[in-house]
Amino acid sequence: MQEDRFARQIKKGVMEMLVLELLSQQPNYGYELLTRLSNVPGGTLGVKEGTLYPILYRLEEEKLLESGWQTGSGRAAPKKVYSITPAGIERLARQKEIWETFQADVAYILNQEEPHEI
Image (cartoon, rainbow, N blue to C red; front, side, top):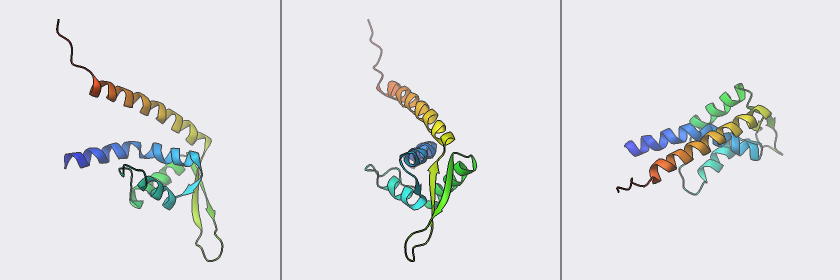
C-alpha cells in the first residue's frame, strides 16, 4: 500500500534523530530503545532489531555514540549500553532545527487557505 510506504519513509528519515534524542535523555541498551519506541502512544515508531542495530552501529562508527558493557547481578547476560557523545548532541541539535523548520513548512502547505478572489 502507498500509505505503508509513505509511513516507512517518514520513519526511516527520523529514526536517527529519535535514537539520539532517547540517548540524550539517558544511556540505554538496544532492547530498551526498541521497547521505548514501540510504546509511544500512536504506535507508529516501533522498529525491528534489524532496523535499530544498524543505526546504532553506524552512529557509533561516526563517533556520535559510544558504548560499553554493563554486567548485571547474578546470571544476567552483559548488555551493551549506548550513550551519546558531545558530537552526537551537536548532531541532534542540528537535526531538531531541521525537523522544526521542515514540520513548519509542511504544516504551512497543508493548512494554507485558498486564495481569496476579489
